[in-house]
Length: 566
Image (cartoon, rainbow, N blue to C red; front, side, top):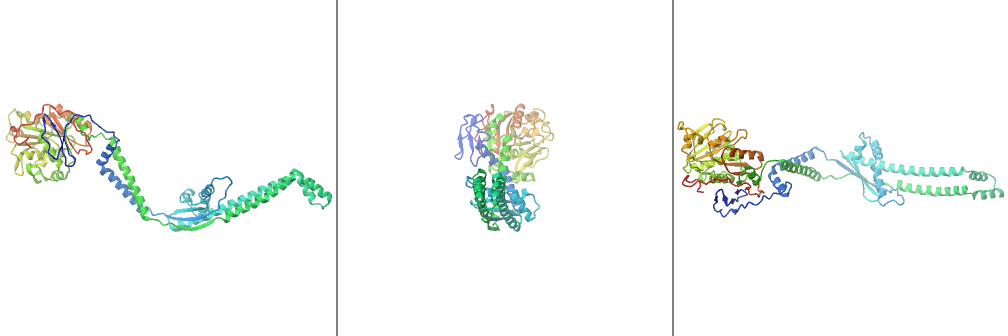
């Protein structure tokens, strides 16, 4: 087996019924010992690496699209303006409260809907309270300092809203502290009034209104010793101290809190904003692209590994090459045949990729001999006929330039191989390519109805230009034979007895590959091997899951001069 990875070729020492020639000094040789297939899980690191390497164009395109979307958003969305004001506060503390709770309470008050409504009322804003709350943040810098940062579409609005929030927040705190002091005083006064309503305290009040006398003082001393009178005296004393302390605390809360720094615009880094938009877009596109690539690969039923394809074909994959570029194919599709290509030694176009040259060399070694009919080989593309057409045309030129009578039969739709040789029309004709003659046959009817020359040779030959006459004097018959599962491959038995299947990695499902292989066998044709085009560089399987077909012999040099001597 040969594997195209860079410039190295891996040759199996076993090739059909004979040993292959010794590999060159640039090659690696090893024995295919039938080691069990060692596969990794679908979600293994090797699977992910191989998938990402194959789908670089897909996820790279999506990542670039995400980057461009981020750039467009950066240009379309105006930069928001932020203003920050700092407040120095004297938080109201409660005995036993954990450290940090007082300033946290102040932050909660500043972020309350009440403060937001007061600020909106001052500014005359018509937006919802929830949207205004989202436009500013409150941060505790220390246990006494908080920052209020407002985001607005204009710099003036940001500064004005920050100042309004600071003003309303301080005012709301002052109102809350004053209301708490008033409530405390009123509550204590009410308790004093209730105690004064007691009969003992009423009697004391009546006696205090009389003229001072020894009898009056004696009665007062006696009444003041009563529990109700003592409770009233204690409550009055406690009220005086409590209200005095509350007043001091309120003064500290109200007058000890003020604006430390008036609202001012924050400096906005356009470079940072650009990096955020573009970076987030690129990251989102990259994650999305990689996710799509991995999910698509997990759900795909297309085969890529050599062993999987060999098992499905029921024949070994003896050659795997890299992807073939299509620049030359496009030129030929525009009317530039193979004759326009610069030909190197032995007839191979020097502009061809190394992959094509290796496929051509392998096909040359795979041609079997026939004791009665001319040597023939069918190349059956399972999915893409372009590579097969290029390789078949190059192989035909190679042997035609060595003086062999070569017939190329193109059974594919559009006659891709015949078109490369400059004879796309139906019929049998002789073409000249670089002073080399070869015969090209394109059946007029549907390939499933066109019987090949091997079935007709015993009968009388038609006119001199017929396919039977051309094949009767030919040394080599090469057939390009794409197969349709709905038509079968019975017609192919009239053209050849041996075939090589060409599979493009990741293009065909297991069902299609198996169907093509079975059609070839049902037609009585020997499937020599498979050729994998577009092999994955990370694939380390051997492609020998199925044993080579028995009964295939290499063509002798004396039977077909020059065909196997390379």
